[in-house]
Length: 63
Image (cartoon, rainbow, N blue to C red; front, side, top):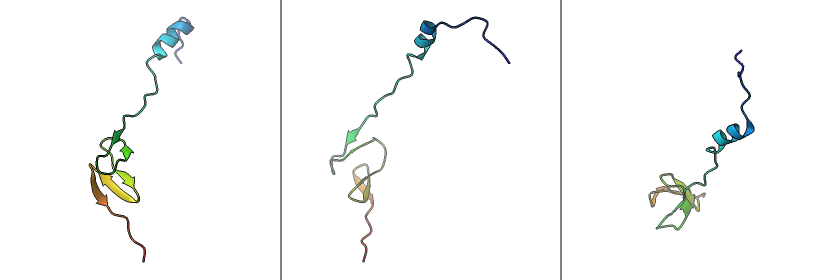
């Protein structure tokens, strides 16, 4: 098994890890329903599934 020849210091290790960050997702607001959702994704409002401001699947009415 390979082993490092020299110890990597904590500052050098931490400099490399500065690029790993949590990023908040970008959200958009639908103009027809006013729901906040991820862009380019289907979303539900009151049981109906919407995409691009249009109803894809309507909620089934139980009889």
